[in-house]
Length: 328
Image (cartoon, rainbow, N blue to C red):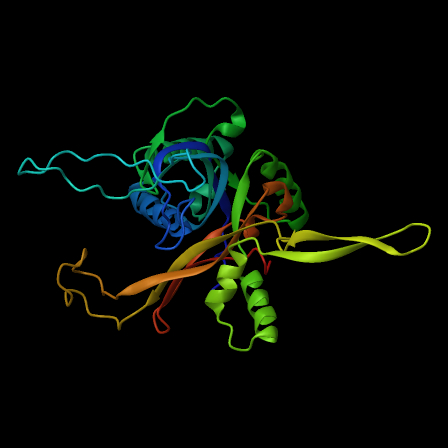
């Protein structure tokens, strides 16, 4: 398992308005784009910046959601996606409806970067951040379109912050920085909760699987408890009631996809027909799942707990996104 790359600066793109992003994050989850979509955005952005006068390396990415509007019907308890009718096909017949989940987002993206631009003066860093913001406006974010909006406050403008070398200064700097991300919630990894749930379930049922632990954390589990009411004078039980309680004590826990696991061997480039890229080795994969938590930025005491990074292990066939919130 790799660790968070050491970055010398944070590139902050605040209050991005994204229209019609993909809310179906995997075959089993929906509600917010997959964190792998933002890692893909980071790598695509890094390639676009390769021709800049001072190219940078994008090491990691963090996502803070300030607001969302999922495009679903609200006329019943079971919500359904608002789908669009496609134009007729070449024969004049009605084209099939392809189910697409869409969501409008108001998010802040934080990139951990390294490169010579981080050591430049503030004016150069601000110009570079604005250039990156303009570049990102021409790209897709999780399949959605970036809408332009005026910067209502200086904290709402793209900026490149240099991470202080001194630990005390860095802590004070981040405390001030995270205030600009309120109100909002940051997505972090909670693999530790999944491991704990697995241990707890196996202590009661040795045959329990990790899938059962994941499903257990993905829902509210309500349990009835008998409550006996006593007479204050005699101490006799006068009546018995049932009180329902749930096991959600850790906060806003959600099931999330975190990458892909290999289903086949690694084929040489060009060996698989109809692959998107004939110059890159190919492998069939399936989605990997874990547990995440939405947490307010003011409860995060280090930028290292906020950022996600890629971890590819070709030998074990694991290609996943990692976040060190529970380990830093």
